[in-house]
Length: 117
Length: 115
Image 1 (spheres, rainbow over the protein chains, first blue to last red):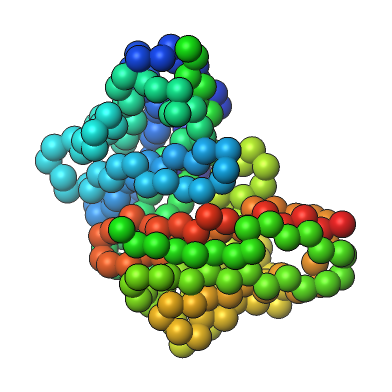
Image 2: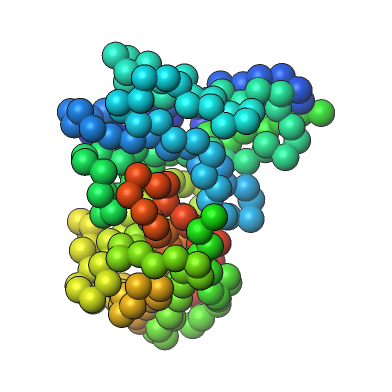
């Protein structure tokens, strides 16, 4: 079964507008972490934002915020005031289990975001 | 922030040869490293988890004799693709975690093309 599901293969957004990238996850472990990464065409993986399963508030990092709905098992990324440089592939990822060094990340299929001028 | 150096960034090799990819943490030490593979327009798939001084743990379906991982120190891990074939052409990327509850820090990846 898919652990991380990103249902939007591609998205377009107008520059300066906000966009939401969807992510749902599947786990029975009460302790987990959710991550979003950006991958530009150069291939590097850029960490954007993190949400822990026990965090009470939604995570925010500058223009990025995470809409965490635990009961629905969703962790959507919201990018506000889109910029042309936001055009990239975006991956949602999950780490299951107690926080340890060795817990691996499982990635979703990704969403390609294109920002239009 | 934690810096990870991965090289080469691109390599083209002939079928049947071996290729070594290095991944080095420059400003931190970590016991655990992850090696991922990414085919074009696809997601990152974990190949193996390596711990300093011990054997790597490979994911199901990944041939340990083909993808040799050496993690001899806290700052260096290598992935060797042995007897490479065209189907091994892919983007290989390493990742470290430098402290508990931190995100993975990725290298810049290696684009391998086997002709």
